[in-house]
Every structure is written in C-alpha cells, then in structure tokens.
Length: 176
Image (cartoon, rainbow, N blue to C red; front, side, top):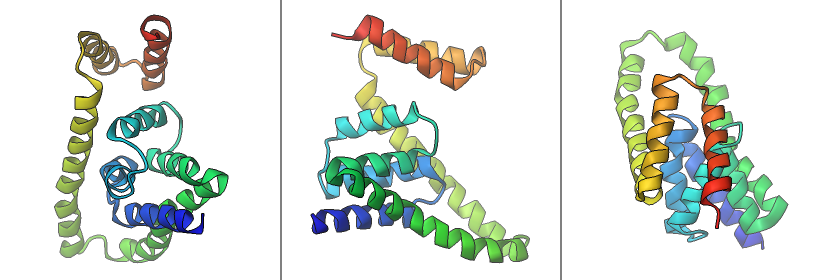
C-alpha cells in the first residue's frame, strides 16, 4: 500500500510540476501518468472520468487527482493525490509571485510568456482531440455536440445548464 501511495504522489507531483497553463492543460500529462505510465485505467475510463469531472464545480486537475488517488488508494490515496497535485503549484506561486510583480515588465519575462502560451494551446487541442475521438463517433453524439455548441456559442446558455441538459438527456434517452 505504501508503494501505491508513493506512486500516486509521484504521478500527481509530476503533473503538478509540469502542468503549465492550469488544470485543463494538465489533463494530457495526467492521462499519460494514469493510462500509460501506471495503467491505472484505460483511455476510455480516463475520458469518462474527465467528462464526469467537468460536470462538477472546481478545478478539473485536482478533482481528477483525487478521483484517481481514491480509486487506487481509498481516502488516503485521494488525499495523497491532491497533495501531490497542488504542492508544486503552491510552492511555485509563493516563489514566483514574489518575483513576478517585480519583474513582469522585463522583455525576458514577456518573451517567456509569449513562448509558453502556444504550447498550452496545443496541449488543450490535443486532449480535446483525444477525448473527442473517443466520445463522438455516433450520429447521436454528433447531434448532442452540435446542440451543445449552438447552446453555448450562439444562444449563450450558461455551461452548467448545457451540462445538466446533456446529463438529463443521457439519463432519459440514452440509458440502457
């Protein structure tokens, strides 16, 4: 059990320390750890966890770290996963913020930010593509995606209501 907890901590710590760009940008790294490195779940299970995690409030990476930790090590595993995920950014925030506001206008700092932003965008595109390929493939899933896009982008319906609508549709029309 101690080895499992150490593995959970190290996996989440790596994601936490390398996950530049926030929770969504950390998801591809988390997928590598959970699916490829440790084989704690399949790619489909990871996609399902990601979908469920996005339906809940709060940061996605920490929710997924807790869920994966819980699945592997119970409540202690969830706590270890959370600590592993948030410890690097907590330390970094304390250190970086103390320097950032002092040096934010330097050309090197502005260059650093310009260099990292496109990478974060690519990470988001990759995870969206990977999960999209696994999640959308039937006519009904294309229809759901189209309705969601229209509701979110054109009708400006709050995402919480769109998610709730998708959940209810799935329960009443897609179960079984």
